Length: 115
Image (cartoon, rainbow, N blue to C red; front, side, top):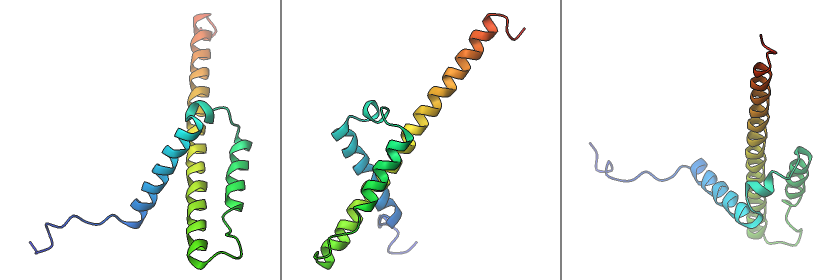
């Protein structure tokens, strides 16, 4: 046992990034309405939104170095959170399609289709 064993370990850089992404996803859900809104989009919509925000990551040419770094980081957090939202949407879409397939197979079996 060392003198430092009682210290709480600091968060690792990746943990801090995931915290920012989680906060941004929560902000987006509050702003736009969460899955009810997200599920109205298509895969092309998600690609368009992500591309739009990624393109805006380049800071204005007259920005200070500090502003440039903050602007880039903020935009990349938005882009990453949008990508997470797209993956959440895709998970819900896949689960829905799977349920529909299973329900159809059950219905077919009830009608004697499967013997």
